[in-house]
Amino acid sequence: MGMARSTAGARTPGRPRTFDLDDVLDRAIEVFRDRGYEGSSMADLERATGLNTSSIYNAFGSKKALFDQSLSRYEVVRLATIVEVLGAGTDGLDDLHRALEIQQLESLSEWGREGCLAVNTMIELGPRAGDVKDVLSEFRTRLAEAVRLPLERAVALGEMNSDRVAGAVALLVTFTLGVGVLMRSGASGAEMASHFEAAHELVDSWRSPTSAVKVPDGTAPPSKIAGPKASPRRSRSPRSRQ
Image 1 (cartoon, rainbow, N blue to C red):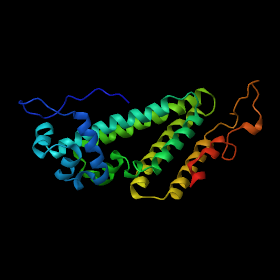
Image 2 (cartoon, one colour):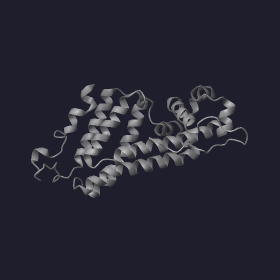
Image 3 (spheres, helix red, strand yellow):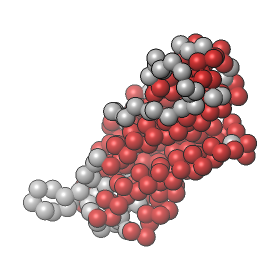
Image 4 (tube, one colour):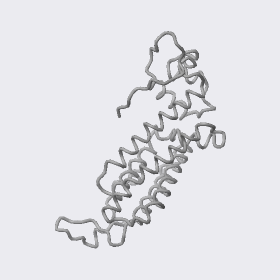
């Protein structure tokens, strides 16, 4: 995913910067995801970024400023990925099912087990988050906006009643944040599968009783109406591969 390279920083005038700022931030993100803000030492950050402490302080001003910029970059990149997944589809509720399957696969991956930096920070810092509270609040707001995209498509397709969208957005944001906690806590694949299965069934429950999958001649056989047992995604669920 292409992104414009950052030029911001606390660097004082002098020799030109000889490293890529976004690359340093991406490396720092992985340290903070693994160890948290308070658990990440300057030695950890030196090893990960390839910069010495003086270079880090010259570029960013402090460990706190490095963390703030890392969290902001994580928010931009992570949410761009989420929007790409949820915004690119042409279906409604089926797009949500596919997004849940992708999320479940990620939750079982080595990378996913480190959790979400935003969720990790909410847990670690809580009321001590200071000025990054705004970044975390924006993350939740933009996550809700992304989740709304396939739901609005579902309404447009006649799959779902519009008065259910607000509640569905709130539930899916809560679920996504909760998955971040489970990923970080080392929940087993079976435990994760049970939560995702419940999420799939919740999404199915939002389908309007009159909604059905259309066949080419325009009819909608009762056997095609989506539901917990009829949804074709079941055979593709990671749970079946546990």
